[in-house]
Length: 196
Length: 196
DNA sequence: GTCTATAGGTGGATAGAC
DNA sequence: GTCTATCCACCTATAGAC
Image (cartoon, rainbow over all chains, first blue to last red; front, side, top):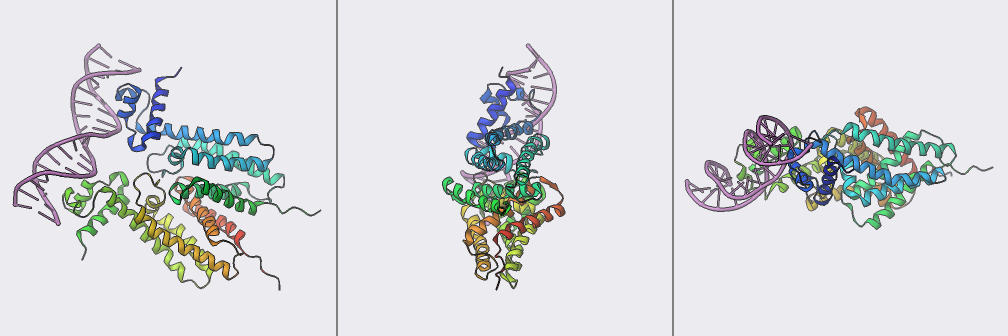
């Protein structure tokens, strides 16, 4: 039950992962699948639709990195797990990260729907976890959306600085910086332990 | 005293600003300048060298946005001015921002030297300003590099979330979010006013 | 230093046969 | 639904004349 459409999608991603976006062409994808190039058009409207498969897959993979975190006991552990999962995704799947998060929206596409929907869903979960941290007194009360964006922007900014080469290229060193700086942002959200 | 090299560089940037990176080709640049395509090779080694002109120019423009901030009186005003200047650069020169900061380093280039040097210089200035804020008691004592990266990552992350369409596309609304969240990070760096 | 000419490719997409 | 054939556009880069 692996359809041709799925094979084409898989070949597109293999090509992207192996040789970069410049190497993804209808012809090369077709060659890898073992069909002619025009055959692809029976399954995808055009090249953009093909490329959007990379984003869709990247977001699925990200979800896989975040899901385990959601099973943790405390709200704070869930939040921390998501933040760590996001780092692991960026470090382990750099190409998917780049394509999903580092591509100017005007550039390849407006994958609007495919991209926006699952991504928004993931983000909503993150905001919910922040809200939980506020409700149970781990974080000081406030706007969960604002706090969530604060955290997300820091994580995103750090990872992108690393991905674009501003921190050298030692992932271990970057992990430490990421951990320390995220901790500092979290410190600012934490409720001071109530006396009495 | 506008050399042909300068005209080629200018035409490259015009083309990029008007029609995007996909439209920058040796042929089109040459056509705009009024010479033949091979003539460009007398002034630039290849296409990458031509594209690096966009990065160089983008960093010059960023410097123009940051420079006025450096003349402010207090260390904190200088820091705030740089943060605001960075936002203005990203909002007013989105194409330059994207090309300089949103392009995975493996992609178009390794413009290593051209990019790294002036950029590192700008960053060093930012770190110095943070150090000044610590020295004069505006910020709590600590590692200026770490605090600088903390701030820069937040600013960078926010701007990229906006540039990649995660905040809608209303710059005014984004300015407010940016201002509020940067303030929160700064709050965490601030020294509590000393009693006595 | 600039030109013409050209080598030697790349690519997306469609028409029409089967 | 897949094929072959093809259109038509684009590109970087070099050779060699001037």
